[in-house]
Image (cartoon, rainbow, N blue to C red):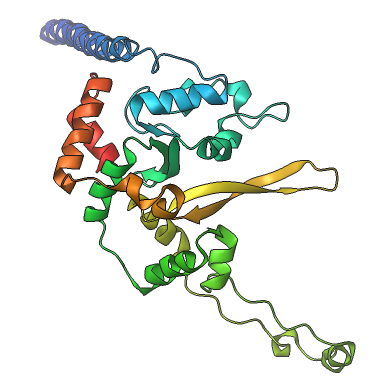
Length: 289
């Protein structure tokens, strides 16, 4: 009898606890839902952040309006090309989309492009490029190492270079083995391949981190993307980035500002707070700093 009473009491306590837990979870769920709905409704107050991208001009318009436009999701809702592009424009065989528009957008002359946001790609308008450059160069010590210095000075010497040419010039690609004459090949035919002439040694890995750091510090930007074409004139493969410096691309006079690096940062933060009222200061700082 005592056991039955204890079992009944335990069941009531358990049911009460489950009901209370469900109420708490439901409340938290709706609080989160309302929070994100509020953020979304605030983002849609900006007509450009609420738009869908359908053509290259839409991307340019959005980038010019916000001043700073990451290519992919950056932690701030609505502030990326990815979030506003329908699926049918991604890597389609029938028509070009944002991925193919990168070079033409750079060529329009109103936007700069590179890995500018937490090591990821995006655009910045020429109106805001001087302030971003002013602040970023004060944060990134140059050169970080001798390999970075060599890459930078190599591109400066050529003014503009493709990724593959930079790698080859700076030793990030292993040189090919010397071409053998028929007589030499015949002499080596019965010998182990380990004894055949080899190419030179490539530099240790690290090219991607170097080229990304040079873009984040705005010492490099992407000048264009170049593609390979087959015999029928059809483009294939990924575009190869061509790098240069902002000074060579846009002229030193367009990059001059009389503001200190901290003043430039504060100007950028104030601008983005107005454009993105739903974003926290921490989110904005993470994007820019």
